Length: 290
Image 1 (cartoon, rainbow, N blue to C red):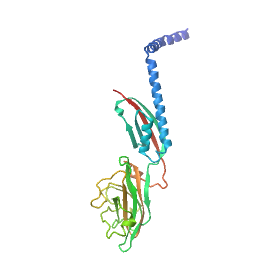
Image 2 (cartoon, helix red, strand yellow):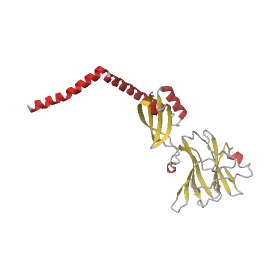
Image 3 (tube, rainbow, N blue to C red):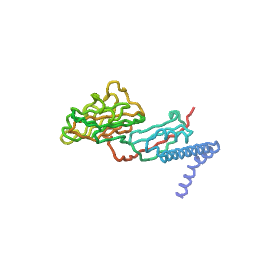
Image 4 (cartoon, rainbow, N blue to C red):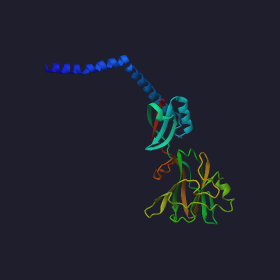
């Protein structure tokens, strides 16, 4: 008898639910909800497919914003926000529309591998040896990309006698400069403007056990290391030329590294050959309300 009473209680408890479902069905609420769910599922599949298309295109390896933007705009009629995150850092963002006015937002994510830190150029070879003066020149050229996305770092791995003393050591960057071979031998006096290696608040310095600098890193802030008349600020998609002047008893390996904007100096590490890092691709799709 107790079992029968329990069963009747359960039946009585679900009667209101049955009545509510019937009412909602009659009003068309459930069918509308199912239709909305179907639309959202379709958009989610579409977003996931677009992420796969970007990955398959190879644009991710180069962080090619133009190609990724072209894929997004050709495959999507919806408003979107596309981001690439490396850890907690946003490496790249492309968007169309205003997400604050979104009615329904669909989110798709994809883990992927890509090159975050790129060595644009490096050298350990003396470009010009001024034997009579007692110093030597190393030289590097490189091209910038979108400065809203990337930072550019100079990294020096130093060796040789008295690397702690900076006298005679300098680094400079020039806009649209010629090659070392063309300029240095024919120039009667090299520009003396330049920043001493490893000195100043903007240098990140690693030392050996004796306190001698072994690795020095500095983010380029164009204008700090340039002769009079040089541009006051960096420009996107521009070729630059960097020279390093060292006394003859020292040596070094020097790098220009492109990294996502805001990367901490301890994470700016030369990697030859380059190593891919884990990133998360996120694509949000939505329609805007009234």
